[in-house]
Picture: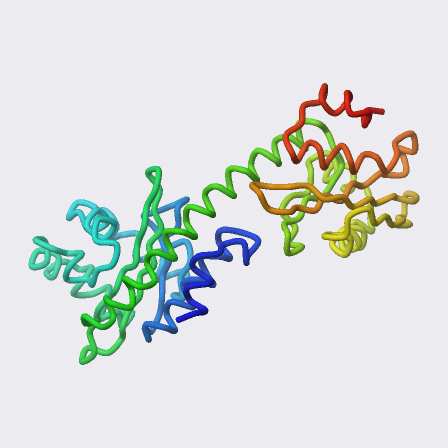
Length: 289
């Protein structure tokens, strides 16, 4: 239970929303004792964004989305927070029981009952849908009780992920608009963004992957510098610390050989951009070249 709560509540344990949902879904599956899990993510709430089913099963599910939407299943799932299949079907239970979705599709994947743990905010939603493959063991009150213990952690993690996603988007826009050649990392050293300017420059460097591996090694080590001998000359890498939505962030600036007129202070500029300073404010601080 403890691992499931941690995975659900802290998306910062993972570099992307997708990775968070996959790990959280699997942790919940283990706690509940389900056969498989499908997570409906915020970017596409009507189709599985993560699933333990093969792609052809996920594709087959899409054929039944409209009938489920018409029956109001998603609305009831979000309103309940935690609900079994019968509760989600609600007044439409008998009608849906006669559809190919229940009579053909669900038996074909061994999904004889389901338990949904859901949350939403700002018009977006996340749902963790668990299936049981034993007709003699449907989900009961004890499973719903476990789901209700886990649902607040999912809600907290979802809100954190949305806020962090917005902050990361702002940071990406800033470093790209400024033309800064840098790599941005989260507090655990996961690579968040390779700036557009650096990505374009490294397209002409055959040893690109080796250089980025060196940048990965500098993440989280402020004031560290390193030199890299690429095929096209020597690059200078400088690490600095910034803050992203209240969390420490690493920025590794990369000065290509053709930009010898620049200095490692580009790392300081990248860090200030990450803290949402304007170009004029950065110049006033004495970091402009």
